[in-house]
Image 1 (spheres, rainbow over the protein chains, first blue to last red):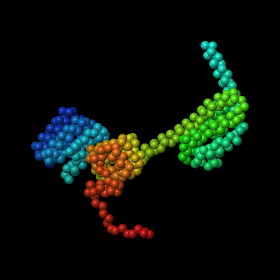
Image 2: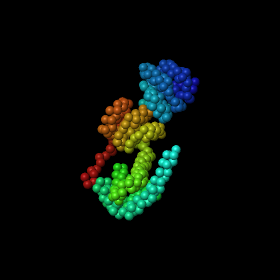
Image 3: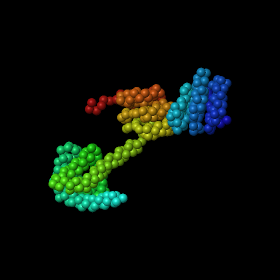
Image 4: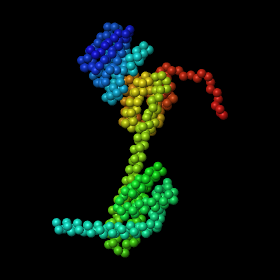
Length: 114
Length: 300
């Protein structure tokens, strides 16, 4: 799977390495949800800097993760959205409700720890 | 078939007659140069055209145009006149001469000359008709040339200015760590709004900004596509982890935005740039205090 999920203290960090197929997106979603339950994490960071495209399926999956986590008391931060991707997403009306966003991993960790 | 031939022959004959008539016409206009020029100037002043120019200026331009006009009638070549009209337009457009004035002036000259032809040939109606046949198409062509030159020159100026406005890049300025301001001056169109979004997002990434204040005090008006572009820029910034505060919405723009029904719920807005920066500093936990009281203003 082109995504590695690391446990870092109270947080889970999922780093996407390359473009994802739909199956891989579903795997990522399920692993994150299971991981949060297993490690009792307080926050999840998903780094999507390697993605050139975020389509509606990816956006919806991330939203699902964020919403589910919120119900369990965990915060979700999506980091590393590229400028072109951000423009495309806003043009197509794709939103990441319930998820926080940050510039990169560093800013995401900062957001969670403050 | 026979009829066609005859028709062609007649046209050719008429053409020969026309060119000799045109010569006679040109000679007449050269002879009457002074009174006709004066008459034309008088009519221009009377109609209150070219009101931004002094009467001396009008007279010297009138002389030049008159001579070029007669030359164009004589040679049938409008290139010299075209060049002159272009040059004239370059000089008078910055002074605020309007299109209707230029067209009015050229049509006045046409009328003045036609009048003088009427007077000269009124004893011979058939000759008058033929003179007018020769004069009118040439005169109309000249009027069109001058009008088109003027409008083209104007359009060139407008294009140049649009380019200049576009090249005035929108600066992205860092005020404090994680805080950018983006002052927008001048009219926004879809192209400029797109460029602005690009600069905004790159600025956010380069400066690792968390809050951006976009100041639109210098934007005269806004329409639906531009408002949507702004909303998209704000959404895209949010996806990159930066909040946007819009400042300086004039009453007019605020009303337009409300009337257009643009959804600004995700946009925070503050009255002026100062307020926007203060709000941004608050969000970033900056505290700005004076270290000592300022001494009174000199002379105050």
